Amino acid sequence: MEFNAKEQLPGLIDWMRTQMAACGGKTAVVGISGGKDSSVVAALCVEALGKERVLGVLLPKGEQFDINVSQALVAHLGIRNYTINIKDCYDGLVNELNAQLGEQNIQPQTITNLPARLRMAATYAVAQSNNGRVANTCNLSEDWVGYATRYGDGAGDFSPLSRLTVQEVKAIGRELGLTAMFVDK
Image 1 (spheres, rainbow, N blue to C red):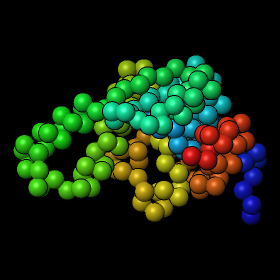
Image 2: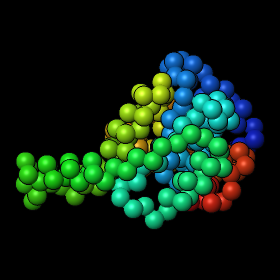
Image 3: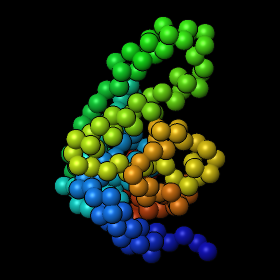
Image 4: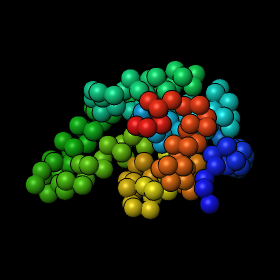
């Protein structure tokens, strides 16, 4: 059966409203990377809850060459947003890990996954400070192949894309009126 975004969208929107009501959140908080998944989740949250109940968190680690896409998305959706640079936090933790464990004992995967975990910690801090609930941005394709960081981008209070493949996520994004800049990245 072919996926029909127009037909699937109302059920997804209703499910999101139910999830937010069940977890008692007033605000959906989305970590905005500028990629398709966070863009579509943010747009879904706006559709389900209204832009006044959605908050975006931009989380660069130092300079982010493509942060303009994230900034364009929050402007396009008209949502409140914060930019929290995790560079100092990341550098401080890596320095402490090196001092305590020894640089040679730090696994490359530790360094790879650390930014995602710090980003999620910051996203939860913003959510807790705004009576918010974090929207997970992983899709079915990523979950299926294990392309998510545990306690990082794989975390969240509800997961709107968890049953959607990459192509279905893109179709939902287009149905929501997102341009290629947000859907195809």
